[in-house]
Length: 451
Image (cartoon, rainbow, N blue to C red):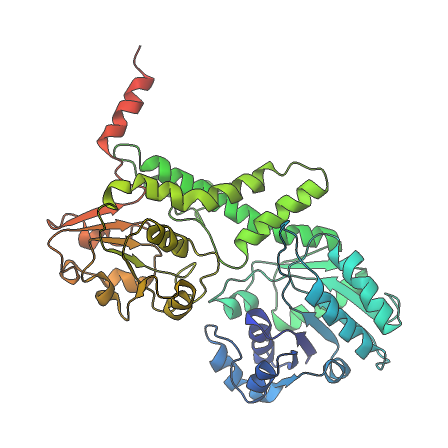
């Protein structure tokens, strides 16, 4: 069945969803107050940078429509996804400012529409936000009550920047928070025509809102646990975090995903979702210790690592940082641990050069000339005394001993991707973080058993 879907918000998720849904043969209307984003989509250009998006838009241009008019989009469609920013505040809570404005506009547009319509909040929100924060806005401005042809759901997506289209079209499961059964039935039917046979979990609005936060908070807890293992292994003679992770990852209760110890997590979602869960727990008088501790450990990880590596970062040595985005294959530097490292090194008065195949420009804008952003990988490492491999970007795995001009260079590899190329080379001191702890640590272990 051909569906007619509208999407409010043409950012990274909204634009990618619009193209993905159109690629399955459905008619899609994209809505945004940003006229440049609307003009781009209307002319067949991707309004944002995302893997595969431009090709998908070009291939499905006839089914993609774009407008700044909510009234036009609502009139032409049966279901609307709302994917607008919900920025964090100083408490860790999410603001509904943009979502409420979108719901006001949708409500006003529904006044002129006689048929039924389903509105789906996809933006990440706190538990209770959809029912108590957005539904009253929708009812007030539409002049309808829920159930009177007005259907409402909360259904977030579990995607990662750089793989948004793939993640949307091939999810592990679909999460539907429903105001009532009719709302959930319609959304599930639309999803089936877009995504196909994928496990669906339907529940109350509040449970779905909590589940979204819980997924990211759990993943960050797992990442932080793996980083703790790497830190411990760095102090055990012969320690090897990969051997430990590979072993415990075979346990079906644990699994291997997100268990590679290294630098902390970052990006636009993980840090703020963890803080939000802590806020929710405190608000409801539940224990907030776990998400708060995970957040604190993550924010302090770069400082702890630099203290451990102090002896390699003295005397005004030239430091090269490889990787600036919050993860490989991304241009996003928001909450990037690599950027935290760069800032910390600059604050110590060290000359810093850096390279990232995608994130160089935004990093240069943020650093404002305080660090040299190299035009190429080999330019970055050529004169470095110390090289920090901050992200496991595949491009860095092309480095060879010949790329290091210094007679003596120290390479600190936080993700252990270069060991087969650089370990054992006479003029290179190769340190695989989380492996081969120094022998001095043996004394601490020996003292455990000294009677």
